[in-house]
Image (tube, rainbow, N blue to C red; front, side, top):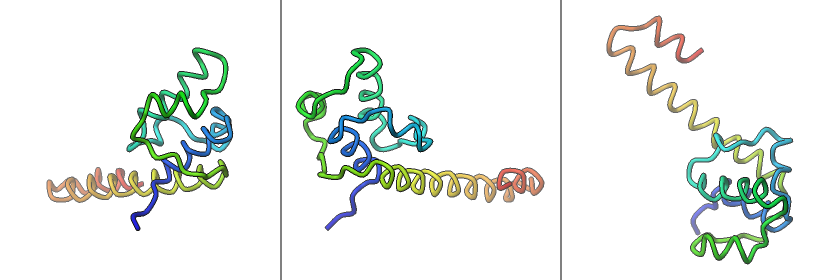
Amino acid sequence: MPSVSAEALLISALVNTASVGEETQYGISAADFLGYADEYNWLVNYVETYGCQPTSEIFRHKFPSFMIYEHTEIRSACEAVHTGCNKRRITTAITEAVDLMHLGETEQAHQTLV
């Protein structure tokens, strides 16, 4: 069974609980999304535009291929999104530092990691 994306779990929880916006108290923003950025941005824009929460039906209409999971725990999903985002950031920094080291830019490589 393939693993479920933390981003998909968070989006599902926000839709299932009609709580778009609650994730921001846990430090979540659009910058934390990679695979489901369109879905997340649409949810935020919907609330900003219409002043209400989108129903699961309207979300499914907009994103028919998105699998909505039964997850409802926003905080745990936010923590999982942060973990994934931090792993991507660390991987990017390490890759950039290695590239800089190959160019002889050891001081810049160190700064990239710091």
